Image 1: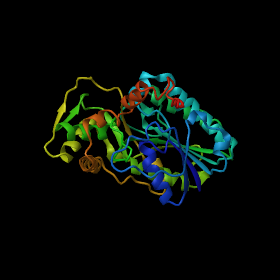
Image 2: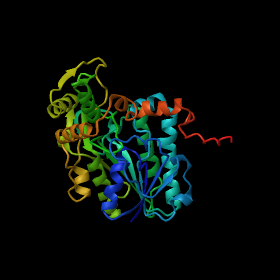
Image 3: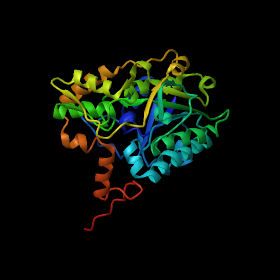
Image 4: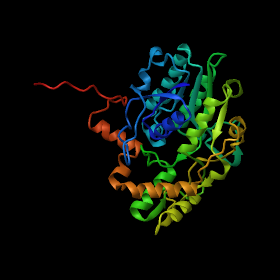
Length: 346
C-alpha cells in the first residue's frame, strides 16, 4: 500500500515509518521539519519526503496514495494552552482540511492519531470508546473536533479510523522529554531524583511508541468495512497506572534514584483509566508488548548510552521550549511557520 505519513520527523513518526516499511508498505513522509533535529543518538534515515507545513498541503500532494496516516500536530498541552489558536489552526482546521483533500484526491483510508486525553476526568471507571468526551485542554479539544468533522465526510469511498492513543512513552531517535515516563526517567538520570510535582494520584493509561506503530499497521491491514469510521483506544489495561506507580517503576530502573512526590502543583484534573478491548477485537488480538517497567529500563539504557545532557533534555527535547528557541532565533514566524531564508548579499 502507498502510504503518506504526516509528521514523519516527529517522536511517533520516526518510530512509525520503519514499522510500516517492515510491513511492506511504500511510505512517503510529509513534515515541516519543526522537530527534525531533536535527535538523540544517530540521525534516523527518513523515507522519501515532502518538506511542507500540513496547513499548505494541496490535493495534488495527496494524489496516488492509498492511505494517509495523520500524525502531524502540536502535541503538547502546555503549548496548546499558551497558543490555543495556533493549536486549533494546525490540529483542527488543517487536519480536517487534509482529510477533505485526501477524499477529493481519491485516498481511501485515513488513519487519524487521536488521544485518550479526550476523556478528561473520568475517575476510576474504565472508559470505553462510547464514554462521554470531556477534553480539558485545547490539545484534547482539537482532537475531539477533528473526530467529529472527519466522521461527517466519511462515505463508501473515504474511510477514516480514529486511533485514540494512550499517553506515549519509550525511546525514539527523535526524542520527547515532555511526556510523563520519558521525563521522569530523564530527570532521574540527570539528578538522581524521580520528582513528581503532583500528588501522584491521577490515573494515566500509557503505551509504548512501538506499540502505537503496531496498532496503525494493523489498522492499515484490517478489512476496511470492519473498522470504517470507528474509534479505538490504543493501549492495554495493565498500563493503566497512577503517576506514583510510574515514579516507582522509574526508581526501580534508574540505579540509586529516589522518589520525591512534592504535590506542589496540586491535584491534576486529568485522571482516567481506559478499556482497550475494542482494539484487541478489531485488530486480530492486538496486544501491546511493552510494560511501563520495561519502558523505564529501555529509556534509562538509551539515555545513558547516548549521554543525554541537561541542556538538551530541558531544551531540544521539550516541545514548548524548543519552539520558543526557534522563534527567538527568528526561524519561525508568529504562526510557527519557518521564515523564508533571505538571500545573501555578495
